[in-house]
Picture 1 (cartoon, rainbow, N blue to C red):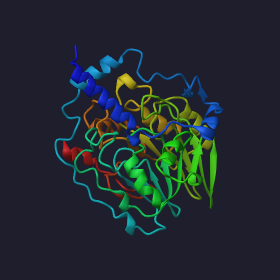
Picture 2 (picture 1 turned 120 degrees about the vertical axis):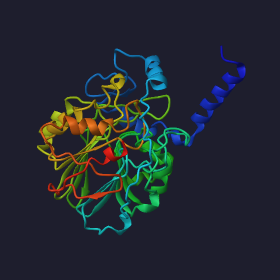
Picture 3 (picture 1 turned 90 degrees about the vertical axis):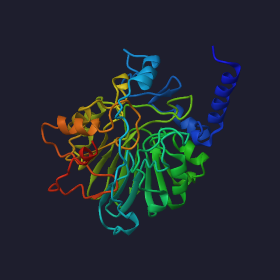
Picture 4 (picture 1 turned 180 degrees about the vertical axis):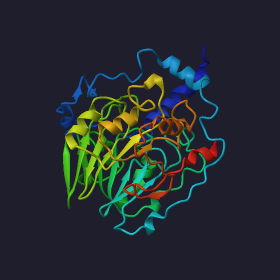
Length: 363
């Protein structure tokens, strides 16, 4: 039985967590009224397209915890620091199309003259606490000061490895608009972002951004929540249509029928950015298992795919390099899958470029 002192310490940790501003705020007021009218909201929370268990039926929270404590791969974290070259984003020509992966699910896009940042987590950790879920050594190349004025900051959902309060609050002064899923705007307003510059979308809702740019929120198979209450904001993928490109911003998702439906709706994509990593059979419905992202790419009719959600944080038990090895091995049809290094500026439209398996030099 735990001691009284230990019990008080545990309560203190819970209390500190609950008053931590990084947790954000639950939707209220007009935003909550809008949420309650959403066709994707029922029984007090947002729902996936199909019934979805966060933990698979053949497991339990106790088993998950035991696997994390005793079943982790010794190679879950790289043995050596990464050494990447950092593109100076502030020096990029404004009219140059560019994609720069920042590690995990964070990336910077320049497309048709617009500057876009997606799910930036640049504080060095993916947690409400700086001592946990720390970035791998050598992956934290960028800070908010490294970015120009942003036309759009896109947040796919409110998990800590996608919505980082220290990062976004530093980016607020240089961000023209934030685009996110319905409900997530409550956190952003609570932290000080101007509500008139928020574009908050439910699934299948679009925003005409002007000058030939349209963005639409589409389904993902996942969940949301930063505290004890889950699914009060919607998790989303986004379709970004520009004057010359159609890009699928996948966020986090398990595999389901929505990829086929999105592929049929839009016809094809020039680029799909899909998660690859942090999978586990215990939560196989809310994250791709190996190879499912390749099937999703095919469902979307995507010409190219950039796999993300790997190589910066250890959120599962698999070796850090396994997601990259697996996707390369399972790409038996030789689909156009790109493997940028963190900090590398790539032209995703250049289909002549050969990408090295950069991760293998660290094994």
